[in-house]
Structure formats: C-alpha cells, structure tokens
Amino acid sequence: MSRGNKPKPAPAGSPPPDPVPPPPSPDTFEAAPVALWLEDVSGIVELFAQWRAEGMEDLEAALAKDPDRARQCNDRLTILRVNRTGLELFGVETLDELLERRKELFPPMAFPIFIEQLLALWDRQPSMNRDGRFRTSSGTTFDAAVSMRFLQEQDRTFMLATLSDITDRRDVARHLAGQARDLARTNAELEQFAYVVSHDLRTPLRQIASFGQLLAKRYAEQLDDTAEGWIAHIVEGAASMDQMLTSLDEYTRLGGDPDTFHTIDLNVLVRRVISEVEHGRSAADLDWRVVQGPLPSVFRDQAQIAIVFRSLLENALRFRCPERLYVSITAEDGADGMPLLSVRDNGVGIEPRQGARIFEVFQRGHSSERYAGAGLGLALAKKAVTRHGGRIWFDSAPGEGTTFHFTLPHLQIPP
Image 1 (cartoon, rainbow, N blue to C red):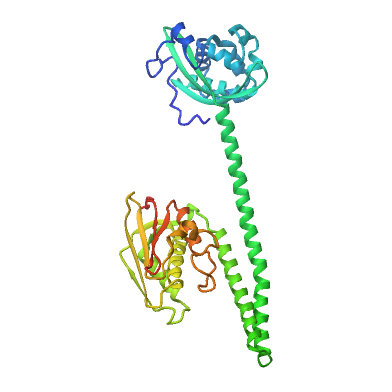
Image 2 (cartoon, rainbow, N blue to C red):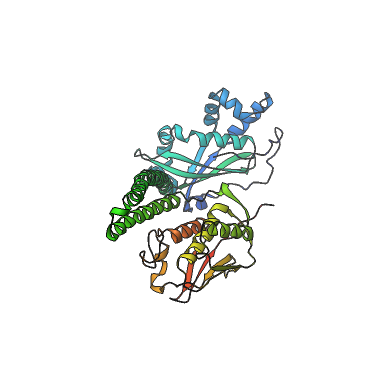
C-alpha cells in the first residue's frame, strides 16, 4: 500500500492535528462483530520524541539505515486487548497464547504493516489502512485488511486496529486475474493462428485460381461448355475462399485500443466510405442514391467506425432489389441518450426469424449461390460496435428493405 501524500510532520512536542477520541470501553470492544486489536504505543511516541531531539527528521530513511530501530519500537509497544473475534481469527484461545506465539503468528510478511504503522505515528496521521498476510496457530496463512486509528487518553496514545479476513476475496481476485491472463494469451494465439492460416492458405488458392484461368485460356478451343463451366467454378470458388480468409483475418484483428481513439466527424467519414465503396464498381452496380443526414462527431476509433458503415453499405449493395437502390444514413438521440445511427435501404429485406444469427461469423440471411460475399460483413460491423460499448440490430421485412440501427455510448471529446 502506498503511503500517498503524507502531511508535513508537525514540530516536535506539538499535539495531534485533530482531536482524537479515547479508546472504546471493554464491553463495546469485546462485543464488536469484527476483529479488534488495541495497543498502547505511548512508549513509541516517547522514543520518537527522543529521536527528534537528537535531530532525526526522516524516520523512513533512519529505519532503512538501521533496522534495529524497528526492534526498539516493537519493544516499546504493549498489546492490551484482542477481542474474541480477533483471537478466533488467529486460532488462539487467549491473549496470553497470542503473545506467546507472537513471532510465529506475525511472520516477516506482516512486517511492512508495522513499518507503515510507525511512519503514520511519526507523521502524526490520525489513521492508516493496509492489507497484509498473517498466520494462524495451525500454520495456515490468511490475508487481512487492516485499518488502524490512533487514539488519545490524557497523556497516553493508543492504536486501535480492525482486521477483516479478505482471503476469499483475494483468492477470487487472483483466480480472475489468472483467467484474464490466460484469455489474453489464448486470444493472442488465436489471432496469430488465424493470420498464419489465412496467409498460408491464400497462396495456394491464388495458384489454383491463376492456373485455372491459364488452363481456360490456353486450351479454350479444346474445351467444351461443360469443361469451361467446371473451370469457372474452380476459379470462382478459389476467389470466394480468398475473400473469406481476408475477411476472417480482418475480423480476428479487430480490436478496441483506446489509444487509437480520435474525434471523428461522421459526416466526413461517411462521405469517404461511400467513395471507397463506389471505387472500382461498374455503373450498373452503382445505380443507387445515398442520402446522408446531419451526423454527430464522436470520440472513437476511426478505422473501426469506417468498417461499420462500409459493411452496412456493401450489404445494401449486395442485397438490392432490381429497381434503383436507395440508402439513407441518419442520426438521432436514442432513448438511453446514446447517439443512435441508422442505415436504411430498400433492398430485398431479411426474414425476422434470422434474428441475431446474421451477425454471426459466416452466417447468411440469403443463399450464397444467389448473393456473393464471405458472410463476415455484418459480423465485422457487430464486433466493431460492441468493442465501443454499443449494440447493433435491425428492422426488416422481406421485400420491404432493411434498417440497421447501432448505438455509440458517449465518450468525452477532449478539448
């Protein structure tokens, strides 16, 4: 535990900065439901006054230079009472038994708490808190949260401590931390595996597609329609698999590092995404009209938000009706105060029974024979949105188009 910003020590012989209460009555002390520990530290206070008179200013440095000073302090304190709950915590019956086994029950791993106690007393702090590890009479160890308060009664100084067993909480925390490390390691391994697999598989796929095209070109006069159809299926299948592997690699690498967050004007971003989606497509494919309403600025990962809009726009182009495609992109304040963004199209629509399934990897709402694609676009959009703490869903009916909605929780935009 860090000592934090400790107050400047008061001049030697000055009273504590605030009035301090006297120690509790014996009946109140014994009846307390938590472990209580009462010490008389007046002897240590007297020793501190002597050291200050000798010119000591930094107790922490003095203890580090001469560890015997800590022993001198230990010899000057007197344990007055430990309540029943405290005795049970250490597994002893009486205070005498605890005192006899003091060195055994307070191993070196508990020593830092004593040093913190001395430093707090030296600095005239009214209280201190520290977690530590102790030992029971049976030899088992336990973690405890220790809260100390210094009390005054006439010319005597006391230390009242409460001890709370936090062993189970610490064990759970350690277990969760271990699981988090294991999960992070597994995710990193899976990400690397997906990258290697996609890279290694794409090379032979491209060779298959290239040699298929070469075969069709060189032996065109010798092939009948059936053979040409087979070769076309081989080339198309290889190209489709290559697209799937590319999308899978993009999906596994989609993260949410806050260091990549920037202030984004969604109006500018969407216009750029529309331009990228239109690039390289034929005029027939781009028989569409995109209407963009006023959009907010958000503090987000620009690349990931671009993925969301690109996936939804490409989805609209892929599942369009024969008539001209119409897409609208709007924003409003959602019921929970989050920005609610919507991308609406007049395409073929989605069966309501598809539900959240269409956002899963390699899941489709329509036949792959009729509509091309890797089946990862909406999965990418969902992962990007959820990485930013939002959610995505859709409203649709077959033949009536689809509206995708997604939210982005508020994050403070730096000035």
